[in-house]
Amino acid sequence: MKRGIFIVIDGLDGAGKTTAIEHLKKVFAGRDDVVFTREPGGTPEAEELREFFLRTREQPLEKATEILLVEAARAEHLAKVIVPALLDEKLVICDRFDVSTYVYNVPKDDTSLESLFRETNRRVVGSSAPDCYIFLNLPPHVSLERSRGRGDETRFDEASLEAYFERRTRYMDFFNFAFNSNVKIVDAEQSIAAVCAEVELCVLNFCRE
Ligand code: TMP
Image (cartoon, rainbow, N blue to C red; front, side, top):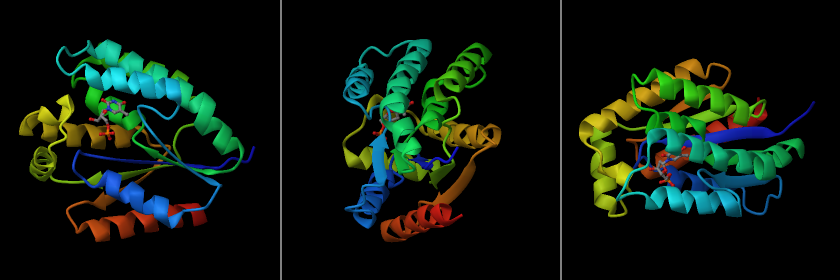
């Protein structure tokens, strides 16, 4: 069955993901065959789950709760937004997706939570896995400096440099086992204009493939 194209843009905090997506919105302005969305979120109910999720800064949730919460939001998002758009042969560009769950919510070396994530995510995502991940890659110390300087820290931004290193390793681990998808790595240490141009090129090239 023909379907559209599903592209995820992800990266460490401060890598320029938001600016790159704003740039893509201008590139595709007026195109009703292109859908921009984000995770956690993307539907009114999933956005409510997002707000709740991000509000838990003072009293962090159990990791299992975090995983199940974002997967619940993902199930809504897929069913109501992503899958219908793909069936309409649209291009879906999503700000973060399952790779962020793996990186932010599954602790390293916790095989039980890793299984919970893999099994739940496999069932939730089903045959609608992303066709391509564009990963904005940044040295962890730059990511930490940039997100501290931004002044809009969430509890995830307050992690130590070590945690940032860990996160980048986790991105790479995920991309190694999500072998069915294309992964394009963009050097996010370049100027923001260069990052935007490279992300645009990745999307346009992928759509031509
Ligand atoms: P944002 O800053 O890109 O909007 O993302 C909000 C935060 O949510 C970010 O710090 C990463 C976190 N997050 C998770 O913890 N799990 C997830 O599954 C997703 C998609 C995001």
